[in-house]
Each structure stands twice: as structure tokens, then as C-alpha cells.
Image (cartoon, rainbow, N blue to C red; front, side):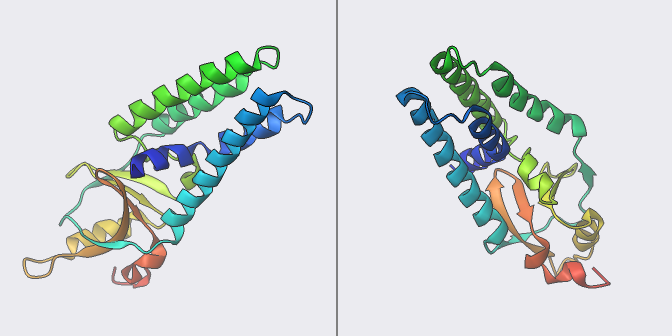
Length: 191
């Protein structure tokens, strides 16, 4: 369920753009139903993002000697293409048909992204300063708002008797949101 909410929150800008682009107080009941659904999605998205960014992270054991690479930017560009379709295809002449078609498309994209564990592609988090990285060693996805080299150094600081830990919010299978504010070691010079 957490991954589903992460997917829904990633489309927050789209919901707002659709509401602005199609706002007309003289529309029929179907329009207002769609408008209320978009408003509910905006509220859910804001609450999910608030929980991710303001909640307290859980203690997670960090893999020693982690190998991390930045995710390819084409992943985010492909994800953003899903924004263009609804904006380009909403037709005021056949509003109900457009909404149904785009809803089916949105549900299909959501199922694919949740099943394939792609919910780390969240443009809202990127706009807020979070960057997704992938571990070539474990396959974990780390979404961080600090220099990733500090996380790599932290993973190399572990010994057999002292396993390095981090505080993170688990978004989905192997997807961790690591906030600078939850990890004191990020600001230390030796970390």
C-alpha cells in the first residue's frame, strides 16, 4: 500500500495542472465529480509527502562497502511523458470520455510502476532536492537530500564488530528515503 501512495503522490503536479487547465464553474455534474476526485488525490499526495518528509526514519543496517550509482536521467524523462498524455488529450467536447480514458491509463501505469518497483521516480521529491541513486551491490534505491558520497563513506566505516546504520523511511521493496535531518553523521567531517 505504501508503494501505491508513493505512486499517487508522484503525480501531484499533474493533478494541479489538470484542475487549473480544466476549471470552469459552469460545468456539469461529471466535471465536478472529476474535480473532487482530483482534489482528493491532491490531498492524499500532500499527506503522503508530508509523512515521508516530516516523519521519523527507522534504523536500518547499511550494507558495508556499498557501491552506488546515480540513476539514469532517461528514467525520469520517460516517467514525465505520462504527464503529457493527460494534458494533451483532455477534450472539453467529450470530457467524460477523456476522463475515463485517462483514468484507465493512469491505473495501468500505476499497476506497472508499483509491480516493477519504480515508485522512486517521483518528480515532486526531485523538485524538493531529493535524488534517487541505486546500489550496484544490493539493488537498493536510496533517495537522498545530501551528497551521496557521505553515504558511501558511511558504508565503508563498518567493521565486523560495528555495522553501520542509517535512519531511513522505507517506501517500498528496497526503496529507502534517507533525510539529512534524521542522520547526525552526515554533518560530521569524518562521515
